[in-house]
Image (cartoon, rainbow, N blue to C red):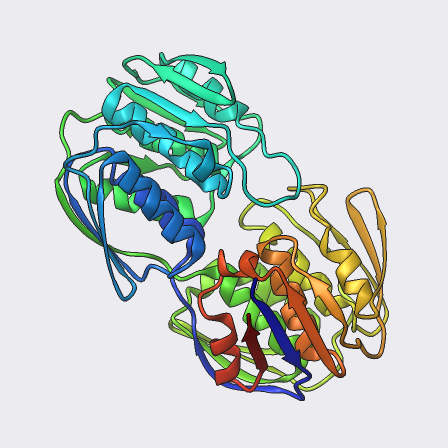
Length: 416
């Protein structure tokens, strides 16, 4: 099992290019199932998760060709609407096949999802929405068995859900009639999916109030080429790393408007940020200010940057709090940050942090994708050497993270 050996860095300087968004490309890949055709997706990050999704598509009958960061997906021979436990348990996003299966085959057998080891993420919203659209659903042996011809319906989510919104979008593309999603997720990754589906020939519109209207169509295009949006979470991780380690770094291939809340918080913390077109320059030459942060649905502060922000606050000047309102038990990184010398007290879903002058290297363990990222940037800022084990987690969400940090002066070595 691989591990990272991280040495302390005085500052990060230079340029780093941000890859395509993992959370955007995974539903795009499953959307290719909806209609038999050949789809070219560019700017795909080469991650454990995208390769796992490619394997799942191949099990369904698709042919996936990977050349660099371009995936060509041929779904003409897909004939098996089945997603097994062995794959779905490793990645919750595999559950995105449910909507496409129903759209194309009018039936699906999908394992209940797995993924990171923190907190349940119930699939009730997905199931209830499909039932409202006419699907018959049974739960047996850890699988969701769905069948039936879908028809348009009004779907009202009690709580905004990215996964459920994506699944309903894909299920409704060819459903008879009109589907309205109220309280639909506003995340850029969902708008990316809408753009892709419309390029396929779907009829989808987002209203000013955030609701989404899908008019079912009888046929779709069988050839599409599409570029994935930049990964705002990877970009945010590197920005927070610069704020923690100090330095001067330009992030290229970013979408600044997707990062407004993050850049505002970093400015509050003392960073200087300049934005120009599709790049962001961040400079930091001081100890960060202590700034309270609460995660929220987009356009709020993303829960996927909560751990990284907490790492930054461990060396801030003063005390701060980090509250996660999205996943209230996503705090496995606290114990590992404390091993590096952080002073954190957890009270339900609120972490109270007293900033310390210096973190110190120690052996730590990855527990999920974003917790891993927090340990990487904390290790770079810590005095002495840090060893991070179980880094297969970080490989699920970051492509060549050690090489990218090496480009800007960070010392991270991968060892078997």
